[in-house]
Image (tube, rainbow, N blue to C red; front, side, top):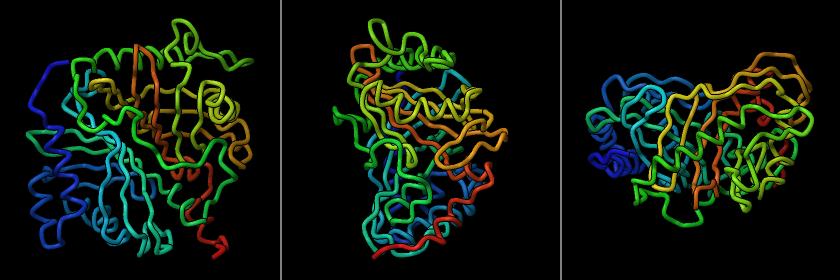
Length: 335
């Protein structure tokens, strides 16, 4: 990995200022950190925002108004040169927007309590400013926090996304190890694509010579939840997902980066698939679907130890013909 000026730190500082600066300073902050024609793709129902004004009106101001005294809390913040798809310098993060939920956000009614709104984010940097952004904000998890969860009980464990066990995910050191970390992840993805339809097994995932550590931790989005070790991952995510979408194909990624012991990639969308089996309470529709995906990994001793996963499930279920925000709004909430 070639060392360059650490644009990671300057972007990290900018994003924190963007979310917490006084109202009268936001315009100047955005001018300093965003290109005039910046393009942001955000999870449904926000979707595409083009230009500084649209980013402010469509995302930044609504976040700041909804979460009183909002602060940004990064668990992972890495950067690198994309050597897979479009090229360029990128930073990527797993973050929470923290505040008291006091005003509606994307139609979600507030509960006037502390919330941790998680978000997976990629930013492409041009001349020190953000030219392009992709964000999967887990609005479905916000619905869980306000007790309006519109899907059946999660397959795995409901939990706040933790930071890495090593507590070094924000601007990590040992950046020269990024290429090796990314190699492990890309090898795993390459073999994960093919699987036995009877056992759901893919080559080289576990065991001697496998990509995953025996004690792997997998942190999934709302609807799936988190799980531990390969058997937990199979039970809580892999098998139900493959039964529902047996022809899923992935790999349409806009970015691959490695940084220290971390690697990340994203696709907008990444997966194409057919809804052929029941999934999370929805009967098979037979529809062709796409899925926006972001993955973040921590590696150790040549294996994957932790994996944070963001999926735009509001967009996925929209394609199935189900408006999860509308469904949640009609739910009765217990005090």
